[in-house]
Amino acid sequence: MAYILNIETATKNCSVSIAKDGETLICKEIAEQGYSHAEKLHLFIEEALKDLNLNFSDLDAIAVSQGPGSYTGLRIGVSAAKGLCYALDIPLVAVDTLEVLASKLSISEGIVIPMIDARRMEVYSAIFDSKGQKTRNTEAQIIDENSFQEIDQKINLIGDGAMKFKDILISDKFIFHSEIIYPSAKEMSKLSFEKHKKSDTVDVAYFEPFYLKDFMMK
Image (tube, rainbow, N blue to C red):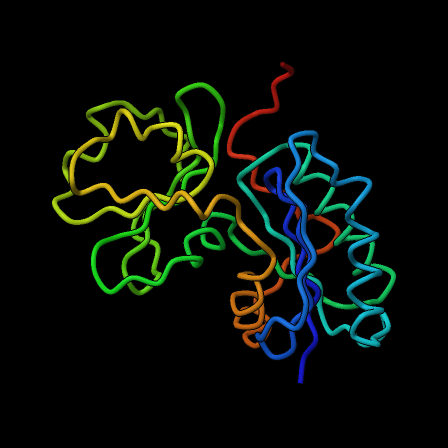
């Protein structure tokens, strides 16, 4: 039996879940334009534990969304996860943010392309098949009307980045899932548990978020 605390702060969504053997027991999250992660994250963690009558000592691992995404959001989440791992002497699991976002969808055919807004006409994206396997690595990608022309199957687009291109990607092969916006710690539960079972962990001292691009001031 394993209790894992999942932390997802790569986008505007500040999200925390606690899972038992890969099943989400509780999830607390809020998505705000002003990025309230610094104020909300530790509060959500404490509330989630209290609601389940658990203590920090009951946790077997901490999982954090590794990016890509917001520089500030990732720093906050990873710093919190590292601090807890040090204090509790438990392992740290890093989960691909785009895989978390893609796992919100269950499809029988076609592909899933999760997109996280990277400002202007650019997104962070990857490609996953109908079984959830990544078939193209994560890229910082500029989207235009010619994007994905080489793909001849249904393309499921999700994320806040995808919604910017509804008027550009107009082929019938594109399916926009507008109700699914941000990655959530809820979908991290299964992914983090599978990694934990295989001891697929990262070094707490040296782990850094996957920023993909250098930080730039507005």
